Image (tube, rainbow over all chains, first blue to last red; front, side, top):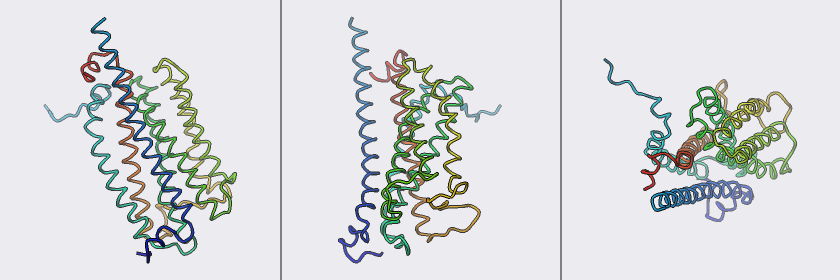
Amino acid sequence: MQWNSVSEFFAMGGYAFYVWGSFGLTAAIVAGEVLLLRAHRKTVLRNLRAELLSESNP
Amino acid sequence: MNTRVIHWFKFASPQNFYNLAGRMWPWFATLATLLAGVGLWISFFVAPTDAQQGEGYRIIFVHVPASQMSMFIYIVMAAWAGFGLAFNTRLSGMMASALAPTGALFAFLSLATGALWGKPMWGAWWVWDARLTSELILLFLYLGFLALQASIDDPRRADKACAVLALVGVVNVPIIYFSVKWWNTLHQGASVSLTRSPTMASTMLWGMLIMVVACWMYAITIALLRVRTIILERERHTEWVKHAVE
């Protein structure tokens, strides 16, 4: 372990913006993709069910 | 008679693949989470400080996996697309379209994290270097694929047009990979090679490899989830989809 304190860990030897920027951006994109995918699936399922309902009750 | 024959083509039917993907994705999601946890732990707490780049080098733990995923996903996507052209299977085009958005995101992440590394190390966010430029072209190929698909209403025709685009674009992948050898680039050479011993500390190498495998598992999870939704949309007029959404 090369960190003597929590603040040293977050400072990343002066590269905080670049290191946390890279990891933060990656985490945001991964989370965003998962959430968008989920939202899209819900929309598709809702539309399909609505279509099915309108077919059975014309 | 051999009763243990596995009928692989059974899974080429969208209905069977829908169910198979539904059973498989939780396993890949679990593996992705566990591996990313271990990989991040190594990235921040086990891997030593780099002698030349200090702590700034830790960006490679996301940059290298993102970059190789962007190239690898492109090849897999083009392979599915080519398979679809050759055998006219419906599922192939759906798999190619399920992979494209994730590939585009990894290409974007590769460029963005590269810029975040380049600024402190090279003093520039961007240079028109062979490696960077060819990776930018890869991002444009993904975006072209997505735009072409969105512009054609008939999904089967869109699959065919996109397959041709994807296959032609494959020529760019070896250009990216070998760019650091063929041209005198600012970008450093390959970090991992099969022919020579690694030049970095083994904990750095292990951290990077685990992050790479975690990204594979993530990409497989997302592709399976996305293809399930695509299957539902495209097969909406079949009986089985009507039963599945009820």
